[in-house]
Image (cartoon, rainbow, N blue to C red; front, top):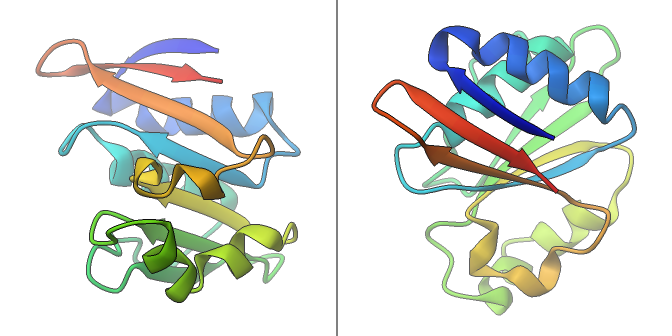
Length: 138
C-alpha cells in the first residue's frame, strides 16, 4: 500500500491501514526524526479506541495503553535510545514481540533489526514536502 497524505488526513490514513491489515498486530515505523511516526501511532491508537494520552516513549522506551472497549493492550515502543539488539532484549521488547494478543507499535526498529520478523508490518514514512508525507507499507 502506498499513500500520500497531509497531517489533516492522518486519521483517514490510520483507518485505511487498520482496514487493509485487520489481522496485523505488530507495526514497525521507519522514518526520519520529526516525520510523523508518533503522530501516526497516536491516530492508530485513536482509531482503535484508546482514550489515554498517547505520547512518545523516548525515555521510558515502552508505553502501554488500553483499548477502552476490549481492554486489549497496545504497547508503544521507541528504540531510539537503545544501542543494539542486546539492549532491546534487556528492555523486555523480545517478550512483547512474542505476544500475538497485543498490538505493538515500534519506532526506530532499525536499532535491533534482528528482532523484527516477517509477522511485523513495516511502514515507511518519508517527507515529500513540508506538509505532505509518503507512506509505504510492506
